[in-house]
Image 1 (cartoon, helix red, strand yellow):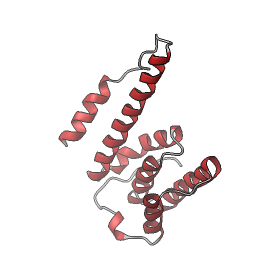
Image 2: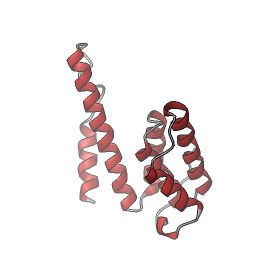
Image 3: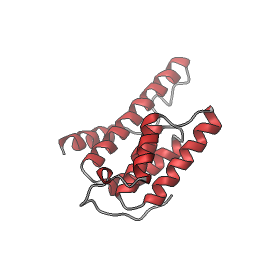
Image 4: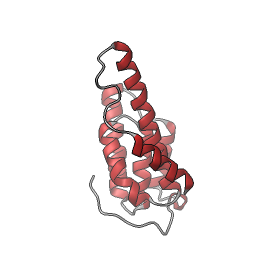
Length: 141
């Protein structure tokens, strides 16, 4: 719970585009680095929510992150797991199909071993993936 509070406090400090008033090459590099750090902090916060079995809270933000980062396997895995735990297996499997197609089309490569294993565990209905007690949500795919 403390980790989540710290991520929320840090997230509240982020506003707008870093160094937006500067148009130098250095500012562009720093901006990219800071945006990567911000994405890492957001995904780490969402991972905490998943560990707390609060996938319902994570799903909307994971959809947004997946839309903005269509080749990011970590985000796709968290979204798939959240949907699966939320009782939305079909939606979770659609997410896998979507990222797999994007990876093949854009990079000419298949998903990595971890994402493939998660997919396999989902289609075999591995009970180790499901946690009870979390709220179900309505949402989009």
